[in-house]
Image 1 (cartoon, rainbow, N blue to C red):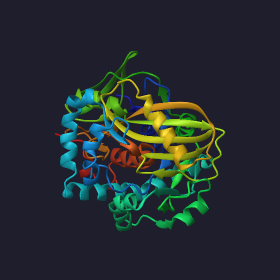
Image 2 (cartoon, helix red, strand yellow):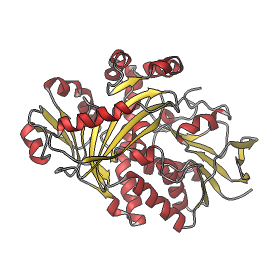
Image 3 (cartoon, rainbow, N blue to C red):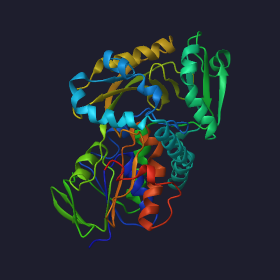
Image 4 (spheres, helix red, strand yellow):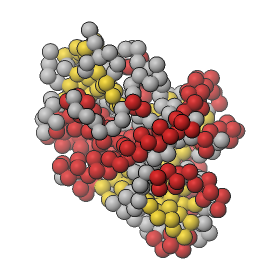
Length: 413
């Protein structure tokens, strides 16, 4: 048997898992049919959301479901054609919105978020990539007293779990965010917010460091993981069988198929997000600015301003709803009337999302050397580095430092 650990999937999660395993002294083979750092790793809002301690599987989101069904371009929406396919997922989602489950989810996310920024800073310092991250904070806008009240549970959760933030008046916010429309109510400024100058370039730079330090990448699809006696023996690719000492499934949407073939349920669906890049925009703010009411984030990046957001639930592989990208851009211009700029590109990505809005991280049941790291929904970039640290610890037999039960690979049966 080879000493190589196969990491299946070369998005941000797979790359950081491979890198952390490598730094832990392991020989790692990274596999993906696409070039590194594509899919959701390419098009995210580029924000490391350390304040995201309240899972989206909560009663506030549940109350929006009727609106989602009726309004095709709402910040949260469902493709009617896929409702039968999505129904089992939404039944599990409803169960996850129970107060006891919300509490468990918040505690788990808070534990991960407490380590997310430090794990990224450790990696960029080690790999010499400081230029890719900016510590400028993050503004969440409240455009009315109603939207301020609607986000009360989120602020309460942040206070409870020690997120460093300040509530800002409209005047204070406009002072730090020039160009913002004058009639907002207030804002929440997250002091520890961090954003990447470009999420694709950041993930790709970590990948390059992985290769320079002896890691291996093969642009090949993995069709199956071969096991015997509870042990991974090999992975199957179009080029043949590759003998490995362990395997980590970190393949986003494809994790469902690969794990399902091994009788592991990974009920991810496509929570589709959109972005529009604006070149030449007059962005006079230095940090990401978001609106939960509109479901968007504007992030100043290396090549312009990225306007990203929305959640559109659909079956994987459905055609894009480009009207949602138009809506995202319209919302951005409503918030920043003098933003200007020309659209240089637009994108849609299928975030792999589990019903309880927690990632699946851990060793597969009744196996010795099969691990999963998938289902990171909106927070893949945020949790990539800490997920890598956790997997490296589990492979080495160390305490991960996190309660692994809520993240369990077997929690869906």
